[in-house]
Image 1 (cartoon, one colour):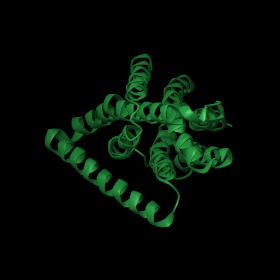
Image 2 (spheres, helix red, strand yellow):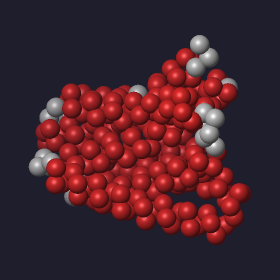
Image 3 (cartoon, helix red, strand yellow):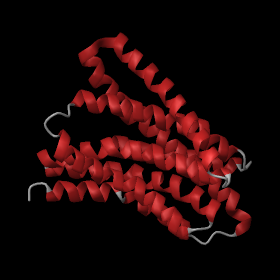
Image 4 (spheres, helix red, strand yellow):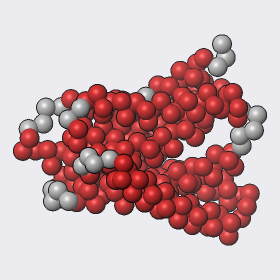
Length: 250
């Protein structure tokens, strides 16, 4: 019974991506599609970059730095970003080859894959935190929910506007979110005795690299293509505000 509440907390935090996907139910006039998509992509990009720079990297980097020193920590960052570029480029090419659907669909699938990778260690962290202290786990889960919601938007909006299928958009957002409780279960069954702060730190630095690379290489260029600068800036500013709330309140 001791694991039930931590598992519930991790599941709620993860599936908040589906809350983000609800945005596709808004009645948007076809003449405003480009404005809406630009805003959503810019908003998601700002959140991904902001969470990585102000949350994931500082916490993970300094945990690694205290144990291994400055030089090895810089090498870790460099490797993480090189690896991220290779992975995003490879996945992008692979999805292009396997799918003939439009560019937005490819972007949504890329977001889903990267965020699954992101949510697995988050699920482990949420579960183990909740297992040790329910109050700590709840605090962490609220912070995770705040950035999982725009991450759900980043998956659902491109896929919905590419396929016109709400079912497809919800399914992909769900798959991303369910990675969090799956990470929690894996932690309990296989990793609880072996996982360390150092392991989580290394994984999260790599995840940060993936999210920054995805945002810069895919999300921002796609948003710029619509030439809706007002909504681009509005999305970026909104994303930055959410990151500030997430980092400084939680």
